[in-house]
Structure formats: structure tokens, C-alpha cells
Image 1 (cartoon, rainbow, N blue to C red):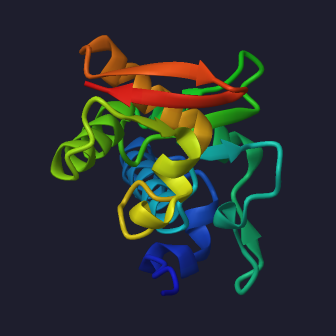
Image 2: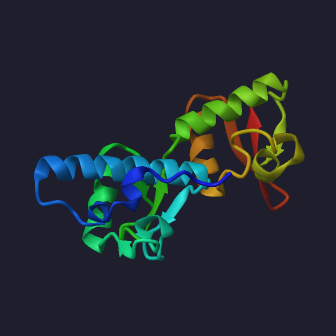
Length: 172
């Protein structure tokens, strides 16, 4: 299914930070929503802001958001706890269209529903296995998976373990 762009995306002024603060606030809110919706649709968990991101450029109208505009959008996302920087240089960020807690809860509900407590699963099985291909967490980025599992570890529902050179998780 193709991504459905909002009407603003074809409106040239959308790609220029507006000088009127009330207008800019609405514009940045539209960008915040667009980034989250786009990442959700395309299952983007980590955004590399050093790469050319199609989201911030509309070739049809020959417009792109400036680096200052992208910086402001990312600041708004961070203020809303929807991104977390992966590094101090702010080159990559986790995108939270679901929080690690929400991913952890989804995974744990799946484990409970399948009667898999007190079993060990590899990280691969949890995100790429045949049994999970129709689950919302299928294809979950490994770093996001580990963040989700950390939330389960904190509530004593799981423990990430190493075995035979592989990483896995035991659910309780």
C-alpha cells in the first residue's frame, strides 16, 4: 500500500519555515505528524539525518525543507518524546511511532497468547520468524527490539541472554 501524503505536502510554503509564529507552530505540528505517519507506514525505526530523506523533499513541486527546518521538526519530535538521539552528534535518532514500552507490551502479549513464557527465543525468531510475520512487531529493528526488551527486563517479565554466540530472550 502506497503512503498517502497530506495535502500540505503539495503546498510549496510547507517547505519554508513560516515567519509568523502561530503559523509556524501549526506548520511544525503538521511536519511532526507527517514524520511519524511516514515512519510508521514505512517501518522506519531509526532515521539517519545525514542521508537525503525523501520525506523532506517533494520533487514534484521542486521543494525541500531546509536543514534549519529539519532541525526544528526534529526538536518538536524530541519535545514530544517521539525521537531519541542515538548519538551525541545527532546524526541518527530512534523514531517512536510506538514507544519501547508499547513494543515490549505487544511482544509480551504475543508471548502470553502463544503460551511461550518460560521459553527462550532468539531475537531473530521474535522479529523475522515465520510465526511472527503477521504480527505488528515483525521486522522490528534490532536496536528498537533491545530497547523494548529492556522495558520487559525492568518489570521482570524477560531477561536478555547470550547463548552459543547468539542473543536471545527468556520470558517469565
